[in-house]
Amino acid sequence: MVAGNKSQESYLEQEQLDPRADTVLSELEEWLEKQASKSAEEGDALSGSQSHKNLAEDIIIPITYNEIEDLLGRGTVGQVFKVRLQIKNQKLSANPPPKFALKTFPPRGIRTKHDFENEISLLQALAYRPHQHIVTHFASWTHGFSSYILFPLADDNLRSFLNTEPPPQINTKFTLWLLKQLKGLAEALDRLHGPHIDYGDSTEPVEIGFHHDLKPANILVFKQSGQEGVVLKICDFGSGRINVIIPQESCSSPCTSNPGTGDPAYCAPEILEEGKTSRPKDVWSFGCILIDILQWVFAGPYFTPDQFRLARMEFREGQYQGYSAFWYKDPKANKVLLKPPVEECLAHLRLKTRENIVFSGIYTLISKMILTDPRQRPNIGEICNGLATLLKEVN
Ligand SMILES: Nc1ncnc2c1ncn2[C@@H]1O[C@H](COP(=O)(O)OP(=O)(O)O)[C@@H](O)[C@H]1O
Ligand SMILES: [Mg+2]
Image: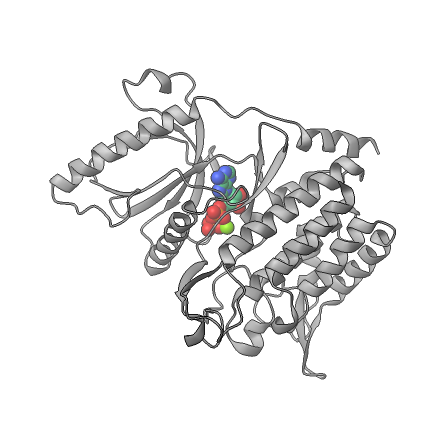
């Protein structure tokens, strides 16, 4: 498979990150620090967090981008741009200045403010427990009525990667790369979810979190230097939350009753039955992402996440919320079922993976992650263990 060889080379290759990025970032940090204290002197309160800065409206931020050419992505609340940092009089930020990604939250009401506050508070909490598969932020600031978060610049997101990359050649090198990425993403989620304790057992406060908008578009693709080649990282924490709870005082883990957040395509069915979701929603969404990935690997019946989404949308019986979800409610049986295109895709994957111990193992994990009853799904810690066991098979 010539195309497969070519594509594999392209995403397993190693690329150097711009070595000047670190220096320019410390220059920015210094500059922001100076501007923020100036603004504070002029009467603007500094925000409570250490790294978030409030800047006076008349300050000119040393960042340049073109709103059309540099647009990387557009979401429900804001836009993400490829930007250059150019701090005046600093020799290291000269020609050409290194690039970053800037997520912008324009002043568009409550929803934007809520998403920004959610995202920045999660990113700050996660900065204390960094993980290689969670995107880190470099700085954030509020300037006038808009807020901004500066990130490392990714090469792609997983949705467009799976939509455009030809299927890979399945060999040991590829299998090892894929398993490491999947295990890394699962461990990143495990870090966010926190301990899986028996409620009622402990009186110690614990931190429990969730993402609640996992989907291929919210996984960034980075070409890294070193052994890893391409690295996948979770981004977009606008729908997430981290709560501190006392297990003995809580009958279940924290949940959200706001079904409006997150992409309905990757949303779990309990939102219909129970009106709220918690950590198992992330496990469901991660299972759906794994289906998209295996479909790419094994040239499944719908080939790409976008074609698969269209096929799910064509099936309208018992529809609820987004037509693009992986499930529907059968009105006759009064039961939540997987949509026929999803069943068809799973049957294809079961057949294709049955002679490969690693991929059939991933298939088995998927089938547990997309159980319609959230109580029957494994927690993310169990998925990590399952992937670690499979990794041992390859090593
Ligand atoms: N650090 C980054 N580097 C490159 N592209 C990014 C980066 N962060 C986000 N993007 C692109 O912008 C899109 C929207 O970003 P995201 O954080 O998901 O915002 P939203 O909340 O609007 O969905 C992503 O799907 C991705 O394609
Ligand atoms: Mg997003």
